[in-house]
Image (cartoon, rainbow, N blue to C red; front, top):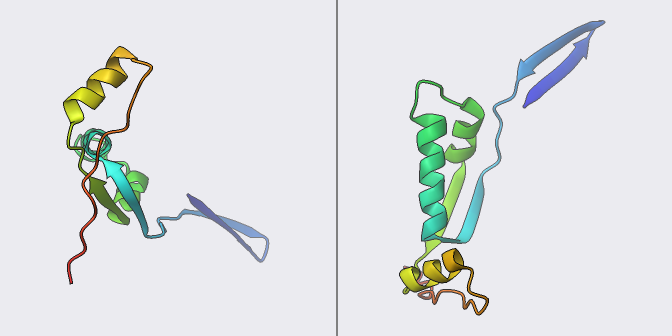
Length: 95
């Protein structure tokens, strides 16, 4: 987050906004909703986090959609031991 350089005995400290491009594949809809709320907090208010903003600008999300989110979420919330992961639709790539 900070870049520190030394030249001729002088130390220079400056912010670094470099963020590599990243992709996350297979993220669930409930996780995307959580990221949306983080965006509202860090980007939508009177304070804007520039590091979070750069991170989000260089982030590509590929969402998998649960076909039965209510039942899966209910099991997680009720802490049922026999938890089956939600069934996802297969990825389809366009030409």
